[in-house]
Image (cartoon, rainbow, N blue to C red; front, side):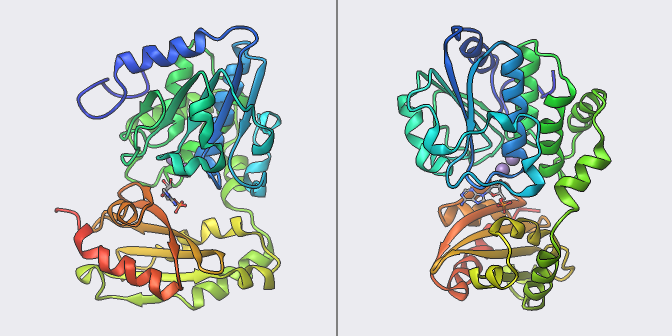
Length: 345
Ligand code: AMP
Ligand code: MN
Ligand code: MN
């Protein structure tokens, strides 16, 4: 088994696993299966979905689509993943699939316009690892102890007797490295390395994968990062003295450097290394008065509490929400919530 014991600490029970296995095994030859991952897919969302999708294909599922809400656009860093041929634009997704499977989405809102499939599908299976998961859908494989949704997906593939091959492994590995910060974060448990070992044993090339996913960006993005980092603000007194560092990137910044919004996903990693702040925030403008907010913590603050209080979600040390109003206004709301989100030490 790839995850720990099955009950008592919030992970899936044996009954949950059995229900998930039965839902897949019970599919007829003609069954339509729709895979959905969260809006603005990251490496875990997309990698888990496509890796699992390839596993379903190996099981003989022929009518199979993978999709995500919003425009059918992916960052270059993820476009090359094996199984990308399963992807269809959200508007073309089966309106009433026999089975819908959701990946890495903590709440229905993360499914955007595809949320209706939870009602129209014959059954809805949810694979996730957010402690803030709202338990939407019918069958829950939600394991807050799992470092990535791909740990759950890998376990389900094992229980379905699908052998790992290199194509499946690439997606699951991208997912695992994305959510563990390339095996640097606290979530990097022995189970993570055991799964990584099994994935690497299929012959995949970790150097090549990491370069493509994490270490490649257009020169325009490098310059954009420079500008946005220069305007970062440090507030040492925030979060009861644990410190806050934050910056923002506007649509105009993107336009001036001829960059797409997804290049900004890596920005938080350059901001969160600030020694003087426990909490780091990046506000990414998505419309005139709307921001996709990323938050990270080094441990003193549980940023998922801030995010959930502001109608978002995430994990203790990595969370996000949609902020409305001016950038200062949104940061003001974060600042006001930081003190109450201090973790007990
Ligand atoms: P990000 O900062 O986008 O990398 O997201 C960090 C974590 O917060 C991920 O686990 C996301 O699933 C979660 N998250 C980010 N934005 C939102 C949102 N608007 N609603 C719910 N969860 C979010
Ligand atoms: Mn994700
Ligand atoms: Mn994840």
